[in-house]
Amino acid sequence: MSTVTKTVKFNITRQDTPESAPYKEEFEVPYRPGMNVISALQEIQRNPVNSGGSNTSPVCWESNCLEEVCGACSMVINGKPRQACAALVDKLEQPITVAPMSTFPVVRDLVIDRSRMFRALKKVKAWIPIDGTYDLGPGPRMAETKRQWAYELSKCMTCGVCLEACPNVNEKTNFMGPAPISQVRLFNSHPTGEMNKDERLDALMEDDGIEGCGNSQNCVRSCPKGIPLTTSIAEMNKETTKRMFKRWLTV
Image 1 (cartoon, rainbow, N blue to C red):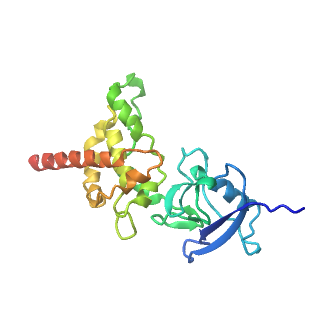
Image 2: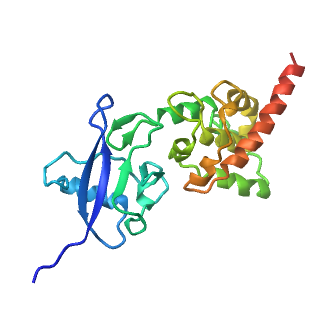
Image 3: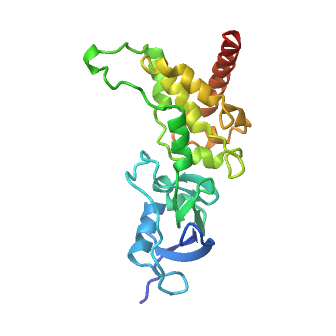
């Protein structure tokens, strides 16, 4: 008596090199209860045979924590940018389409170059400059009410999903996107980080900064961590406006 093995169908957008043209390849993966997209990609890696029965190269992708913390496995699944580790096959319509995020240059297959986002984070100085201050003793404490909402902003895992969802972040613009703007709010709220507050606001006031936001609100709807990105953008809009008037008055 033969038994039919249940399979999951995938349609994966692939690209061999950064310069080559993308193409689609179909796969059928043996179904397992509770499997996610990453486990399906691992199965394809173990047995790189497409739906036509032809041997092919293993699909390349990025992942690390597999717990929706690192942000590395961001990709477009069934038309929605999200984390592949949190995308459960049982909750996805088949055939499952998988593609790299189009906002960033493709390195190979589902691997992308996030340099655009990291350059923006460097530009806005998304860190706390504490080097050399360790011998000064404990720093000022943050008020509990401020710490609570700042913690929500600190959940950002630089996954790039908000940039992919934003219609204003594309190859025709240099808009830095929602994540760096929200990080400015986070680090400007820190008692030590606020020493560089004006520098961060000045960075947001440049051509690739906050004025590029079109208020589509796609970012806050797509954020895997539920970060209040539009609230941060509104707050930074207010802060940059005050900074602009301050600069005018001090000229």
